[in-house]
Image 1: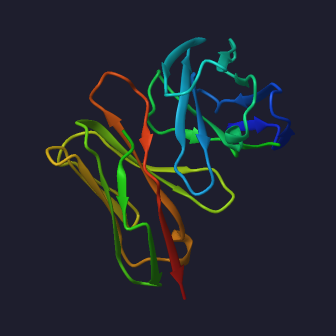
Image 2: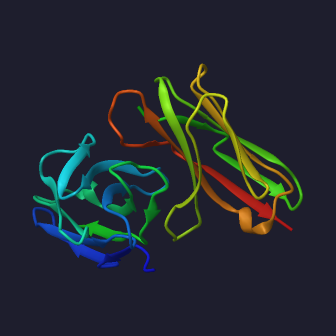
Length: 113
Length: 111
């Protein structure tokens, strides 16, 4: 059984650029949620994907978008990066379109300069 | 709506007990507790689905008062391994299934 993996581990981008972050879900899980965690803060919900469809969205602008693939892995895309987008991006997998007993990945640390 | 956690930080000696509180201004369907160690991903501890429900996990237990929209996490006979930041995540009775995480409680256990 494999855990949740994310890539890349760290990323440095310039303001205005675009970035794609990737997540592979825990074996047997069909739901992926993405969170943004600023330093010293709790994770903030960006959106959730279940069966390749968006299944809920937090208070983030449309330049944050995502995808889920048939193997339940997922991507988070952020366009027109802003300095405030610098954060740890966590993905979490679960089952059945819920947020119950989520398994988190190690995160991608994004720095926007 | 982000829940409020208290205290923000606590330092314990091994063997001491602690209580972490989580309070929301919204009607809640469930409360979830996670622990995050420095530089690591949050780890699921437990979920409370019904008002009044109490659950236990080793020497860590929690309660959920649905009427007061509050939950408490109880750590008894703390161990060094309990150090980390504890987050509550609340699921509101709005039909949306996302979690709102609190700002966290940093727990440090010292020998």
